[in-house]
Image 1 (cartoon, one colour):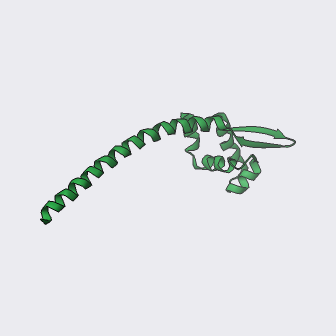
Image 2: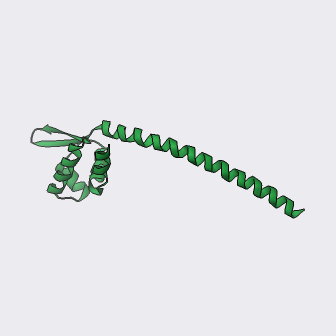
Image 3: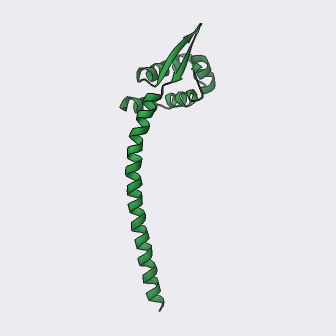
Length: 113
């Protein structure tokens, strides 16, 4: 999973993954849509393939690159654990803030009398 994060941390690779969400593309199409030269796209696709984020399918004279779901599911599961942890912490903060508001209102009422 660290390799997935490392691969996605590079902006061009992240943009390629975002583009491939719509479906398989060739190197040339990726380059045209993202404004990258073919060698740059090929280099980034190699990294994405090495970490398992993309597969390549030869069709006639072209090679189509498409996303693989498994690394993204693993990343999602890992992030979901952290989301649950942060949700608990935010709920605890909400409780503290509500308690402070209640005390503030009670204190404010006593001063007005």
